[in-house]
Length: 145
Image (cartoon, rainbow, N blue to C red; front, side, top):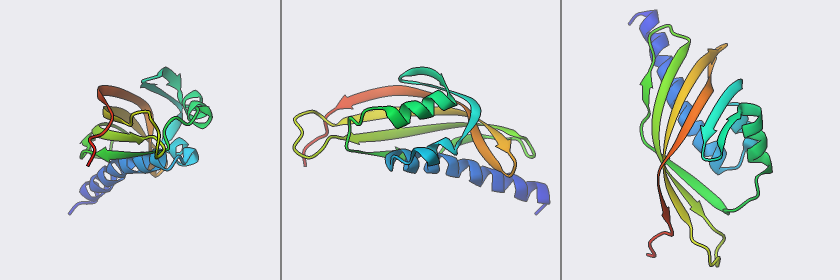
């Protein structure tokens, strides 16, 4: 196997792990870990509008806590990466469960999200330079088991 092919496969794995790292960091409310995944000069377009990465991260830190916990379930990302390139595109579907505290009279929330990411190589790792988070659908409440 050529060194170029091995390097490309390593990069694909690093990119695939980005979605998992993001989901786990957000679900754990580890804002420093979330920030480490984004390029500081980047932009995030999402449910709250468009914001430069520093403002997006500050918004996450300062947002009132509405849900007690959450969990992302991710589909396998579609990754576009040319061998040796320093730029990649990634398209990931997610179902995000947001749970209210036990005993709450307010409904839990389930979201269908599509993350469209432009990533750049930064040293030996990758960072999200532009994220577009698209809300595909929303459901209030969860079925009772």
